[in-house]
Image (tube, protein in one colour):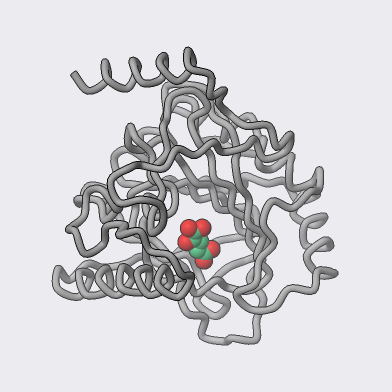
Length: 270
Ligand SMILES: O=C(O)CCC(=O)C(=O)O
């Protein structure tokens, strides 16, 4: 049973960049998810996006996490994407703002859940406490070489992303930043700030599984979304994320709702 209050989780995310919630999942849910994963034909670094299964929907739509996200955004939150992994991701350190850049800032949140015990052997989450306080590396805040230059081909987008990852690695070395590694029990949840530097550590034993499930949440009312590494250089791309389960778009793009959101954004920044 979760003992940490929603307010405490939200404060930790704001203060340290993350919050660890032990015993977030009950044993039955852990057992069922492990059973489901055992049968899935997923290799290392492969994932299933937006799995259509009530077991996983129930995790993504947990009232507790939705309440944390609501408090963090100060408005309704919706899950808009989920990723299920059987093996460690080995994803290099990044900030989620590079994938989900929102304007106003920080209108997304992520929740990762260990579906089996996780340690350095099978690859942990790695993260740098307080790194969300550093200037963001997201497209519109970071120097021009990371800016979207109308990249067209997938190879160019991949190269730009690679450069971004390398720059973070260089910065970690130069500033002597110290990542932490989250060894934890199955059922532990880790919620992080959109600007927290994080990734998946290289497992000591590459043959081991590491079952995990991530859900990304976005504020359901305000944001205008900006996307990285594609689109036109000057024009932010408007995105309309969809509710994970219903696949209904979060916003209406009628002229009135657009003007309404724009006005809200402008008043936030005056
Ligand atoms: O699960 C992991 O190892 C990393 C997850 C991650 O970096 C992400 O979902 O953004």
